[in-house]
Image (cartoon, rainbow, N blue to C red; front, side, top):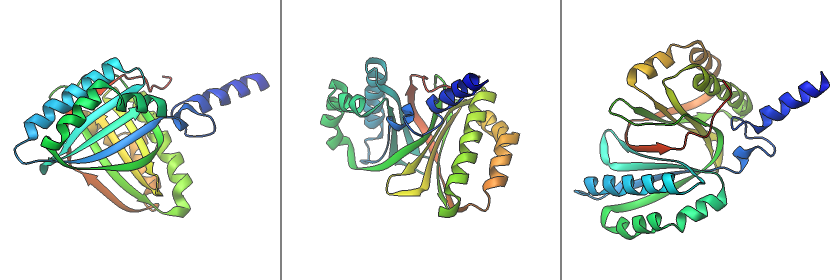
Length: 239
């Protein structure tokens, strides 16, 4: 029995759901970039984003996911969300031919770029094949300091259940601001709007809402639409 318990604890710690100890999640790099697109350059930006993302995810073993999205209410404001296996993998991407090609064209297409430094807390996904029904959400939540650990425990359990139990939940990522651990960033991808609405009716989602209702001081849902979404689908959980 003692050996079984020990093995179970080791498996839990090794899961990418938990950012503890020597978990692989501690080494994973997650980036969130905000970009401004110059007037009249939206199509060119989309083309460059698609080319860069496709080449990077396909040819770079350590590039696990890259997602290009835009605000629904301002298509000249874009976001790029990236996940790498580690710092070395991220460095290889920066040195890559495809990234250098993006940098070369960026000045003629974009007029600003800022990075939100984040610390991954939960990363889970399935292989994404984007189509016209695919949707994504980007949400910022501010948590009361005294509830930070309890909030983390609840949200990790909810996201893990969502990926395991719902076929239409394609990706669930959560990270905290590197400069403010009480500010959480959530990025989610669903197969369709109908899948998202079904998700909102599940016991695990309703439980999360009920349990955390008094733990937060603010929530901002940024209205976004997917431009180009690609991943390896390797951040998986045991079914």
